[in-house]
Image 1 (tube, rainbow, N blue to C red):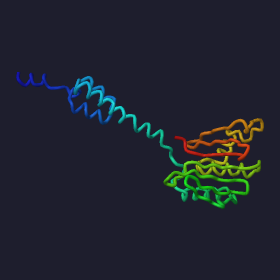
Image 2: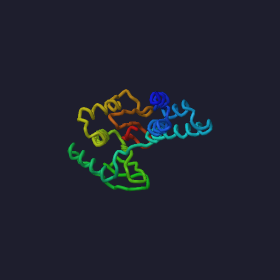
Image 3: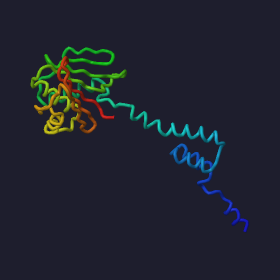
Image 4: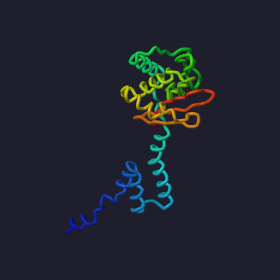
Length: 207
């Protein structure tokens, strides 16, 4: 009889303190629910614990969205990808007159084409920007080169499809008034025209 009485008085696991603290750490929303359901701590302390748990739960998601992944971890990695794509396409391009500043690395691909690498404080390349003057074939080839570099698994037909989606071959599209953006896999491509700079094509990671 005594044994049966003790069994009835045993606290269910969902009402124990350790169960509540376990879920406050593993999955804060459930832990907060249990804390208020069990009525543990004073109301003031529960309120403070709720705020802390909320921040703990939401912060990783906010930080994750705010962090932009680089295209390349360093310039050496970028140069390797560039040379590989140039060789694959049998182009004669090379990075000339390279100038490094605090947040950018600028190179010439040709007389009328400039390539800009936007880098962070660690030297990781976050964005590639091609600026081209005129309407020469070199601009189209350079854009195809950058697409192939940043999306190495794409076929030539896939690269052509990206250029088409950017409305590069649409003669009725007015680039002086509009710009286009295309996302392919994890890369975002943007094409626009500036009267002073010329054609501006960029590639960056999608968050």
